Image (cartoon, rainbow, N blue to C red; front, top):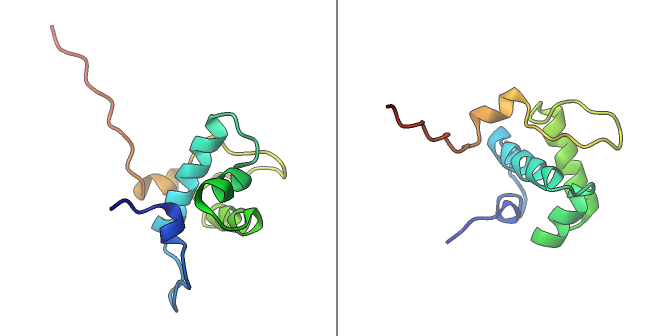
Length: 100
């Protein structure tokens, strides 16, 4: 069974709220969408995973408040994760070049 970001954000988060890891996963998806050339990541996420683009936009803003995405000016999308986010997301390890 595959868990999507919509599954992570489904329902009420409970007393403790959502974790930084939850928002880091969202930040990673956001960056991938922006790098793919889309200028409206909240709309793309809403279309792909359901829900309102306004709610996804608020969640993206929360990821930024938690310093998982770097600061940006209004209307400008981030194309990288903030350093803190890397503690929560897995990134592929580059293959080492064979030694001669």
